[in-house]
Image 1 (cartoon, rainbow, N blue to C red):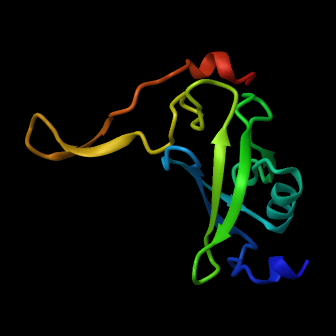
Image 2 (cartoon, one colour):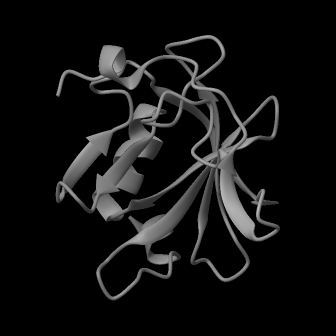
Image 3 (cartoon, rainbow, N blue to C red):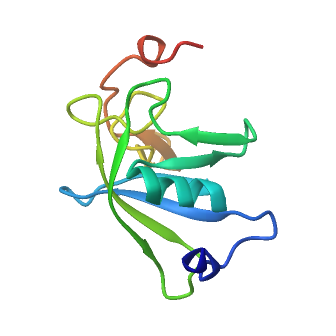
Length: 135
């Protein structure tokens, strides 16, 4: 597949991927794809990632039902980052994060009570993860 040759893959054969919600512009998550994951994503019209922890393809929503419908696939100017413009399905509002939140980027650097910078969760849990995942 010639179009896959345009991607600048890491030494591990991966490319970083950003999933952005088409309608809101929210950045929902960051993940990795290998060639097979990117090819399957283009073929299915749904996001398929490479799970580095499980060392296997991961069809987003395979356990949770929170599937990502892909509207477009873009690459950046260096061809080393993929941007998916998606609609997050399976819950309203969409849940992309395994913590039950809309976005994986739910912590913000804020000033703590002691005056020091600290990470604080600023977005709510929309659904208890224990009710989303089988394991």
